[in-house]
Image 1 (tube, helix red, strand yellow):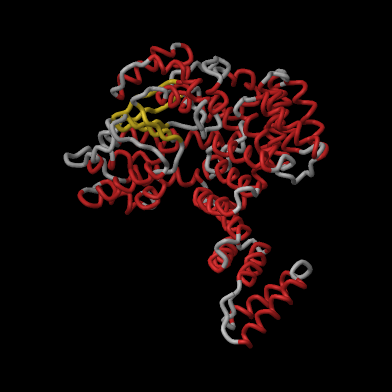
Image 2: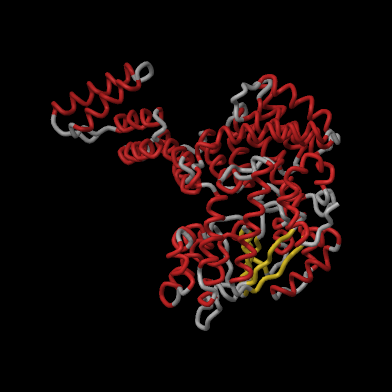
Length: 546
């Protein structure tokens, strides 16, 4: 406690006693006492903690984090406060910054299972499932009845197809808490992996009866139920389940995305802005090549669910390749240079020190995400870097660009049915019509870029890779200057040893299979309203209409 004088110490003790007496029953009144004490210059972690809890109750999470940090600064060995700081960072989508905070707390209290569990949750949020599982297993080892950690391991291992392990952890959780939704979902996911579709349906139907209509878990449950029905070829019922899932997700997330912030509007505005710029500044000019941070720089893009993960994992199996999967390396630069027509024109002639500064910013982001591109062929896989092709063209004119294609009907259906993390882009695909419109607008933008930019670009077709893996991948290797290596055929084995961030992780770990080709045919009736939107792209990319 940082107070001076007997009077101040007495007043601080009085405030602490009053807060302790009422905080559980009247947090608002406790906050008033804490605020008054702080305004008088009295300092104690409990005052800041009380303020933080009040801000949390008002959904003012940034203010809560600031108060927890001030409390932790006054009591740096209080693991509860460090834990609160870490959780506050996770809540504000800064999970990567939370991990060292949890580590600091674990050094003080290594046997506290909850810290390991929370650290695992942070790893899960940033797409590091292997690290998340290790943390959650450590929590279970320290506290065998930690239900949340048990179900976290069950859910994570079920998603990657480790069904034996997932079932074991889920059953342990259910012995402690019967009908635990996460454990039931993990078992149903295992059933789906093991093609026990009817058993999965029974589990999920029973769970839906228990869940409140507004419970976010209903969306995931309905999505899995759709998969179970699809596995039984009950297509109409499956489509209804997918639609119900997406309706819930739209309701839960629509307040996050104002009309002006919608990805569809961003794409349409970019298309107009780019078409209004003169084509001449975009011509490749001497002296704009990136400082060589890698042997060859490759961008793998297209549209989500178009096969980018499959190709990326095949390339990543090569010893001469360093890859980076679905990280936002260009987001800040896009905000700077693609925000309006003026900044886009500025980008079109960017050169000299400003160009070098932007290039270095990108490479610093790459390394911050853990990639080490030096001396390697560096492959960055991020489908929606398609939107940022002007940045790529200006900053990295020597980069090779692989544009992934797949039958538009399969792409849109896959986007609609899969349970994706809701972001500005994925929010657009929560209705079938919305998914088709978004696909159409992104392809129009890509077409404008391909006509107006000087790009070293090669199309890659998902179906070709399925039908002729060696021939398709050898062709891509030739394009990016990579020699063929037999290890590339074992991409599924590689994927099982790596943290794959994409929703396609489980499919890639299965290896090559033809199930993903022509899925749209079974849903032709349901897709019929959007076929006029997709028809131009079906024809342009060479797919059969019937």
